[in-house]
Image (tube, rainbow, N blue to C red):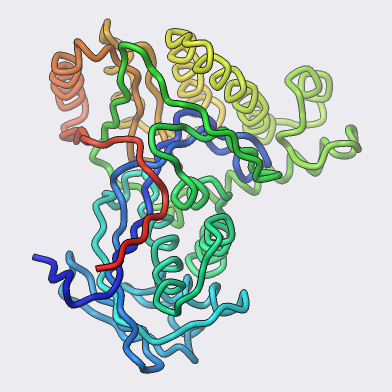
Amino acid sequence: MIEEKCYDYKVTAAGRINIIGEHVDYCGGKVFPAALSLCNTVYVRPNGTDKINVSWTTLPQSVSLDIGRLETYRGLEYGNYQAGSALMWREAGHRLVGCDMLQHCTVPFGSGLSSSAAIEVSTIAALAVAAGEEFDPVEVAQLAQRAEREFAGVNCGIMDQYASACGKRGCAMLLDCKTLECEYVPLNLGDCSLVVINCGKPHNLTQSKYNERRAETEEAFAVLRGALPGITCLADVTPAQLEKYSHLLGGNVLRRARHVVEECDRVCKAADAMKRGDIAGLGALLNASHASLRDLYEVTGRELDSLAAAAQAHPACLGSRMTGGGFGGCTVSIVRTDALDDFRSYVSARYNAETGYTARIYDTEIAAGITVANI
């Protein structure tokens, strides 16, 4: 049981689901995420020392971080995300005070729903609140991304942290990762619902081939920039331009580039479909996205492919795809609301029969990003 009265503030930041637009944020593309009610909560109080004392509701361990030595904590098994977040906040010129913080995370770890982003964003926001500082959610997202890249070693884009910090209840976000322009699109699925299912195989982006994929897309951009001097990122390339200059690329690099270019096109079409209420069209785009992530980007794996195929085979499912970095984690599906129970039963049974894993279906809603409350 959490003794909230022992703390001064309660700060939360959301996990996220990405409806479509996978592995394009670090290529400057547009993505279509939404914040989830699954979140990381930080209970915090200033303590008048030069220490940030971190404990968790789910772990017996606790750590004490010296504010003057934050850069030395990269090797911590627990507390490295908090140390990295605090370091980036301090290096950005913000006031950092000693505090006690209790962390409680309901975003499943290794699920592809961005538990790390929720932890980083909520920690930075809690540090600001403890110091009596106002904060800009966009800056918090940018500093959280720096913590993920420079401290945790994952060369990620901005989508996860931005969605965690800036989400809006009941809305998806059409986010341009190059400019950070964001359009909030009401998540109106008519007689359908979003279903998030965990394949039961955790992923780890640092140990996966995430950074390898990023290097391959950077190689593609470097080559295409020579033929298309006006482009500033791989996401600027149109499908027609890629076809014209595909002979300059080869093998895996061409396949990765084709996924990025076509996925960027799918994101724009998906946002338009949702605005028009064309949920069937949106579902078809989800199916195409999963096929591309499977065949061109090669980040799905047996479990995610089996889970998506089981969902797509159900007559009430309009579309299903992996969401997140891949190599394990979750799928997101659009399903007719009146058939949800049958869908869940069918997919769970078929997936378990094919893989031996037990799928976990989450009860979650589209929620706000950062929240702050006095206790």
